[in-house]
Structures are given as structure tokens and as C-alpha cells.
Length: 128
Image (tube, rainbow, N blue to C red; front, top):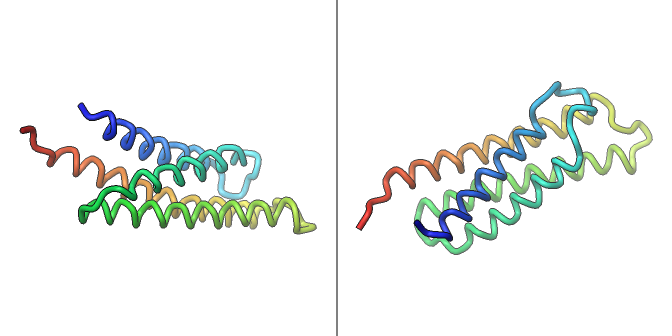
């Protein structure tokens, strides 16, 4: 067992589960989507991206691409949340909430692709 692979798998799965926890719930109800969970998803996704920088294989490049997509979507969701709550006079309307949750849904899809790649990579690993 490699500690490096355990840490990598831990952060990939944590990023996906945090993102799912924020995404799950009624699309237009802001009470069901916690901003701290979105913040945690952004931070863990950024850590996961940094962990993927060292892999020089083809599957590592795809891992990095999925992580960058998830980061971009989550940062856009966070900026939308901040605009709605801090700048806009309308506040967190159902339309703004739907935008934030939809962006996090895109990030969730990228995270699920990353988890699938991790499972495929793990099952094809050969012991020496």
C-alpha cells in the first residue's frame, strides 16, 4: 500500500462527496445549500488539483483536466454566490440559487469522471 495513493484517493473522493453534499437538494431553495460546504468543496478541489500535478501519464493528464474543470465550475459558483449575497440588491433568489447549484452540478460531473478514472486506474494496477 502506497501512502501517496491513499492520500490521492482520499482527496479525490472527498472532493466528490463534498460537491455532492452541496448539490443535493431542491435546486431553487437556498436554505438547502450551505455556503460553507461550497467553500469546503472549493478548497478540497484545489488541493486535489495540486496533488494531480505530479502525474506525467496520459491518465494523469485527464485527471488534471477533470480537476481543473471542477475548480473552474466551483469558483464560478462561488463568485455567483458572493455576487448574489454581497453585491446584488435582490439577494439569494431562487434563480441565483439555481445558477449556483447548476454550476456545482457541472463540477460534480467532472468529479465523478475523476472518481471513475481512479477506479479504472486502480483495477488495472498490476502487482509486481
